[in-house]
Amino acid sequence: MRRMLVVRCAMLYLIKKQETRNFLTLNHMSVLMQFAMFPTDKGASASPYVSRVIAMIRESGLPYQLSAMGTIIETETLEEAQSVVTRAYSLLQEDCTRVYCTVTFDIRDGAVGRMQQKIASIEEKIGTVNH
Image (cartoon, rainbow, N blue to C red; front, side, top):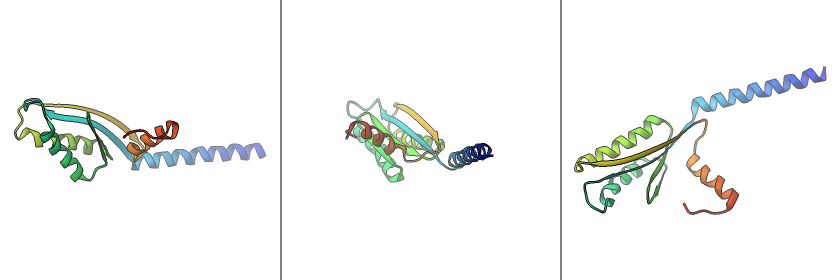
């Protein structure tokens, strides 16, 4: 009798755990996108053009992190991330005839705030890092 109760409790726990996971998956998604976009026809310095893109991202209110080699943003949907790339290109195509772009996605169901969580996880293991 006691054994059956333990088995039933374990089964109920697993069912509840799966229901919680399904709820999170249906309601939350994190899309981390790292991208770089700049004109190749404007000389050695691309900062005036990259600045337009960064200003657009800043004004969007999306979480972002700028680095020397690109920008990481976090969105809730793949479409929202792709929209940022499209808007960035629109800003540059006005006066640039050739634009270079790289894009990398990390898409995960059931998680939010991963841009900060990934850094915190590393710092937990080795201490403060530059970011």
